[in-house]
Amino acid sequence: MRITLIAAAFVALPLLAACGSDHSAAAQPQITQQDLSKSLQSSGLKDPNLADCAAKIYVNQGISQDGLRLMTKPGTNAQAQDPATMGLSKDDADKARTATQKIVTDCIQ
Image 1 (tube, rainbow, N blue to C red):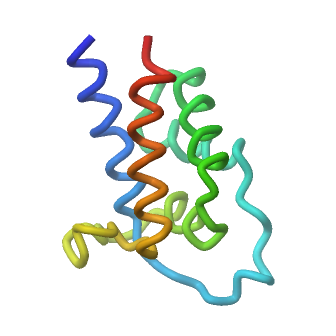
Image 2 (tube, rainbow, N blue to C red):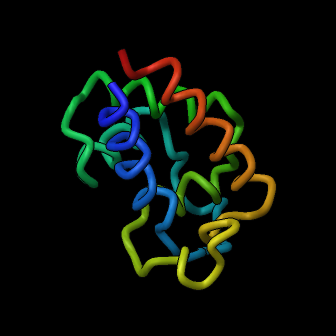
């Protein structure tokens, strides 16, 4: 069980550590729960049920569209630039940390 929890945390880290920002958010399509689930799966989370559960929690936590775009966009490691926020706004980083804690308790059986 402990290994599973640690593995889930490490799987979420690359997703949260994605970097890049595009301020033309109005011109971009909305990031959906399904988009986020696919991104989680392509970044290494092979269990589709866990990816769906995690994506639902991240979206329901209220992370902004800009934050969700950062989380789904491959790029350089933003954690090296700002380990506290991992490239997200402070508000989105706080929500992502809270969501990750919920994922560990709600999605991993």
